Structures are given as C-alpha cells and as structure tokens.
Length: 122
Picture (cartoon, rainbow, N blue to C red):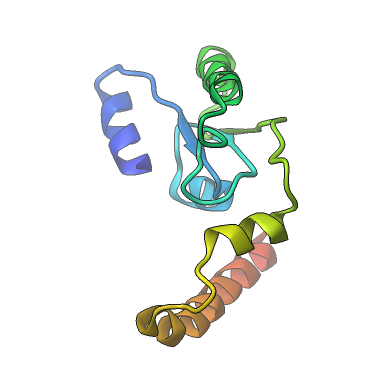
C-alpha cells in the first residue's frame, strides 16, 4: 500500500493509510498513517458498527487534512470492545493450517529480529 500511496502522492494526490501495523508503515514510509488497534481484517472497525466505521473514516480524513509532516503516524483513539487476546482467539481458527503451522515460527523469528534491529538503530 505505501508504494501505491507514494505513486499517487508523486502526481499530486494526497493519501492516507489506515493500518493495524504502524511499525511497517514507518519502516516502508507511508505519507500519512492512521494506526488502529483492531484485529486484522477489521481496519475500519467492527462488522455492522457503522458509527465506529464512520468515526475511523472521519479520523483518517482529519489526518489527511492536518498532517503536515511527511511520514506522520497518528494513533486512533477508537477501542476494540474485547481484549486483544480475546479478539485474536475469535479471529484465528482453533487449529492452524499446515502451511501456517510450518511458517509461523520462522515468521515470528524474522519479525523479532527485525524489531530488535530497528530498536537498536534508534
């Protein structure tokens, strides 16, 4: 997404990235970012909660209109009604697929190494 955003920005179109992964938006360099603390797949909020989804969209438009610093990352004040642990359990299947079971430990290690390297560079 940030690559596409930078392409649009280069021709004069302003963009906003709404993401659950602001760490990666910072690393990759999105022009403007609204960070949300929601489970994956629910970027704008809970299913059928139009009021919450509209609040997130309004926040994103506000960031789009007011962020003056390139790479600005603003954290949304919207809260998911469940703890992250409960939401994750509801989102994930009880048993991972064979591919995920095989790749997840490698992916976790890669993220750990990248975060450690990032933290050391700060």
